[in-house]
Each structure stands twice: as C-alpha cells, then as structure tokens.
Length: 276
Image 1 (cartoon, rainbow, N blue to C red):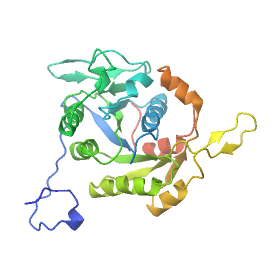
Image 2 (image 1 turned 180 degrees about the vertical axis):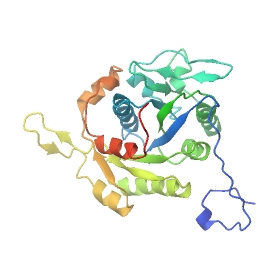
Image 3 (image 1 turned 45 degrees about the vertical axis):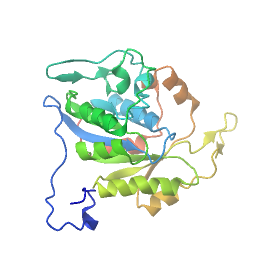
Image 4 (image 1 turned 120 degrees about the horizontal axis):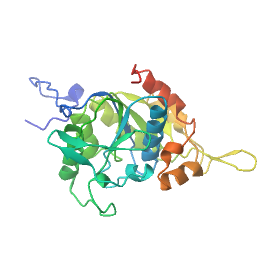
C-alpha cells in the first residue's frame, strides 16, 4: 500500500481507515487553540509576525505560548531576550517565560551556546518539533502560536500531523512569484484539512519620514489579487518598520506598540477564547 499523503479527495485506497494521527500533548498541558504561522518561502518576517501577535494577545490578557518550530533557524528567543536553558522534571519540560509572561520553547533554549548550529537531517528536526508538543508542559495556554519554518517540508508536515491545528495565518511579501509560492502552502493546508484564517503581507511599503507617503520598495503589491485567487481574506499589510527591527535586535519586542495586526487579532478572538 502506498504511503498516505492525507489527500483523501484524490486517494485510490477504497478501504482506508481514516485515523486521527494527532499526538496528545503533554498530560499536564492545557491548550485552547493552536495557530500556525506559515509561509511558502523564507525571509518574509514570519517570526516578527508571530512575536507581534503574541505581544498583542498577551497585552489583552490572554495566556500565550510560542512554539518555535524553526529548529535550524530559531530567532524567537533573541526577540524576547531569552538566553537561559529550559528546565524540567519527571513530568516534562518547562518553557521559558518572557518578562510579560509569554511562554517560549525553542532549540536555542536547549544549548549553552546559542550560536551553535543545528546540523541535523529532516527526521531529527521533525522529531524535536514533536517533542516540543508532547514533552513540553504548556500550562493554561489560550493561544499556542507555532512559528514554522518556510516551505512544505518535514517540519510543517510534522506539525500538521502531530498537532490539532485550529488554523493558520499565511505570511507573504510583495514579490513576483508570490502567487506560486502561496499556492504551494495553501494546497498543503488543504490536503491536511487545516483552515487558513487569512493572509498577512509583510514589507508592503515604507513610509517616507518627511511626508508620510507610502513607497512600494519591492514593487506594487499583488496581495489583494492573490487573496482573491485563493478566496482568502487579506487581513493586514505591514510596512517596513525600522522600530520593530530595532526592538527585535535588542530583545525588546514586548515594547512594540503597533496596530498593523489588529485585524488578525480580531480573527483570533472570533475563535471564542476567553482571557484567563
């Protein structure tokens, strides 16, 4: 029998038992909603979007966790000035906590030298992501944001198979191949039966510091056309904002006060999660 690709609509196996492949989280975890932050390519600011969403949700009173699934290129700890090693006991591993109470688990929090590269093949990387779900104690989390590596490889597949993802936010940028890039991620989500909550375009424009004019640094945006092509709501178009970059570099993302992602927050709140 051929290996299952989870595309039931086009499957030739007539007697297949549709089994739920999702792994149970740690027995001491309590997670209301799991939201994946994904992209079809790298360099679109996905981790920045994840961090800003976490900051805004926490500011509104929600208990938030970030599972940094980008094992070979983790950046979340630096954005929140987290440099300690995670601790654990016989029950599991405890994520690190930011100054404002955001819980974070990342590969960079497992090593004494955060500059040491993770030189692993795909199965090992995917296995670590699964452990971040099954062995980490995510206690009383309203929103667990999963910052995924780009593309449609081992790790996104592992996340979709392992975790009961309630929806994903697609992050993109205004480039010529954006439609093709988005289509791959959209099609993967469809095959895995994961709802796409909407599209966020990053680096949409820069604001002139003198007159406030919007400058399309990377050319005119096609986000609206792409969103229409795939029947997705275009939730936000974020500008190039040097303030965010500076805060990320200094590990002070929790000081960010921007409203670019307010429509995304509205969508997440529509999932009917009550702040604790």
